[in-house]
Picture (tube, rainbow, N blue to C red):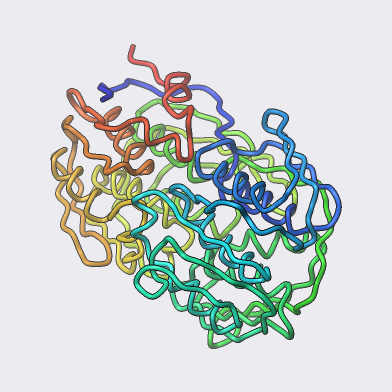
Length: 432
């Protein structure tokens, strides 16, 4: 349990931990490449360690020196693992790993913790089967543990209807070693870190916008070549401090070296539309990704906003936090098209609605989102995290802007993505 009280002002400068999505992919592509890669500012967290350990188990030489990683690539020639590969709580690890294992002519099994074993996997398994992989598991391959006997694959054309970056990435990793062309169409562009990093490692990949949606094409039998990768600060981690500064009058906060990829910075753009004072400075590119320092000022009045399905991919992980901000904005706000939140580490729609209601918010649950009428203040409450790191961090921010005391039932779950979250909070909050 952790008890939090209202703070008066937020001031200072932080470099939040590195981006989790990019840290996962840096390990994976370095392992798939030929030659040595160096990864700098790598995020050390439960999720990313699951990816590192899984690739070590299939024969990848990985040397850790603090937050710098050196990887000797296997050029897609892995060894059959002696034990089951444990993705822990990481959906990214499980789904992208399945795409890699589908290319390997050996047997392997992927599992995860209780939460991950209840998350859907058919979205990846079915197209990998279409490519020629032999895959089975609980509920006909929809739930972990899942066994894979990989081999020679063929490229396919696939419509990624949920615009899932994990599905897209898994198929691209499989398609790199498939015969022919792998073509993926999505209704709108999802996170494109895999495409950007594939180019960094020397792959040729084409993208285009059509009436049907966004199309990505990748020719098979390509090689990747080791390189250097620097991981920028995670916008999802930066979002919590941004929301706290926006909701706290007279605040001034600078967040350094934050990834501002347009498929990831939707939270900051929507806060600006609500009236928040947020500015990108020192824009530059690091390892193929756009990066900026973000300057945030406390904001007197925010106005409600509507979020539609096309907005969701660029702020999916920040929606519980955005709901918190909406609950303290003038007027009404809605979120629609976010049913994917129900199959994250927890049912994040239900967790968000339940906890905000207990804090005095005027919020109604939709099957695919929420309806919110802003209130002037929230009151402290006991928060149920459901073991979900993003729910824990969202309602820790809520506890720092609410009246009275707020108690977080499982603060330790933040270690999945941000082990030092509470230490960093204490660096910037002031109660007098």
